[in-house]
Length: 177
Image (tube, one colour):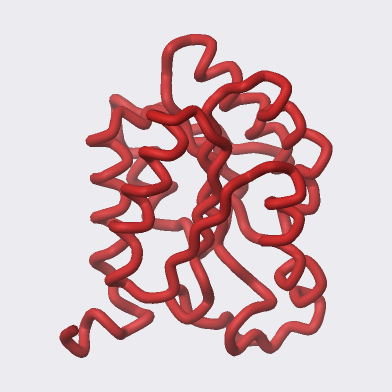
């Protein structure tokens, strides 16, 4: 692994992740603005073949992805770990509706976090998702991102599962507080 592959500031993996999502026919991008998803959001907004929807709250994204599936499209919900708490009830829709669901979650309250307010939901994110029947995969280094994303895409869109890909703070870097 080169030094660049270990650098949390490596700017290549977000572009490669977006390219992979689009290559797998993901055209719907639901998001609440977040610095951890900046490249994905900006690229989806600039992509004439993608449909980006800014949400007022994260749980709206679960319903949006259900509608995308009903309309024959693939989507992804981009949110921060604090938003997972907002989605708990709506995540039951994935089990009842039996539609593929993919979310990419930028973690807070994780490695190197300095903001005490981010710890409760950051530490509960994986447990909450799993309790709602969502399969959780995690990327903590740039070299993890594409293999984890490929697995998440297959698990969601080929097998029809609800899948969350967590982007750890070792990958994103801890925000200053």
